[in-house]
Length: 68
Image 1 (cartoon, helix red, strand yellow):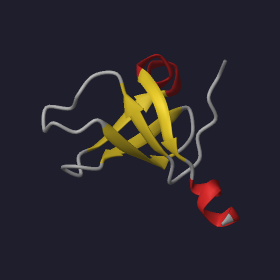
Image 2 (image 1 turned 90 degrees about the vertical axis):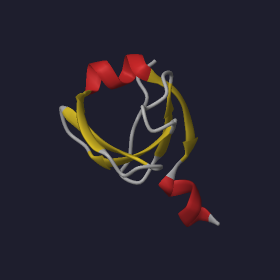
Image 3 (image 1 turned 60 degrees about the vertical axis):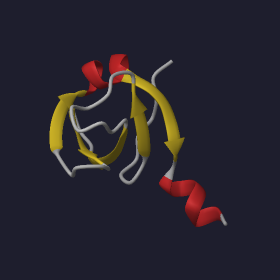
Image 4 (image 1 turned 60 degrees about the horizontal axis):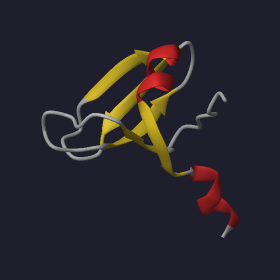
């Protein structure tokens, strides 16, 4: 299963960031996906294939917020 990402989605990765945060916000989409740590603000670019292996779960979706 290939997860769909949207800008503004909050995802949780399998490993903790050195700052202690697990949650990341999707900032950029394309072949590479840009994500920002929600704890320290660090921004990284990962190839989509690498991010798909590292993701543990979708915490929230930006589209869910608009439906309420």
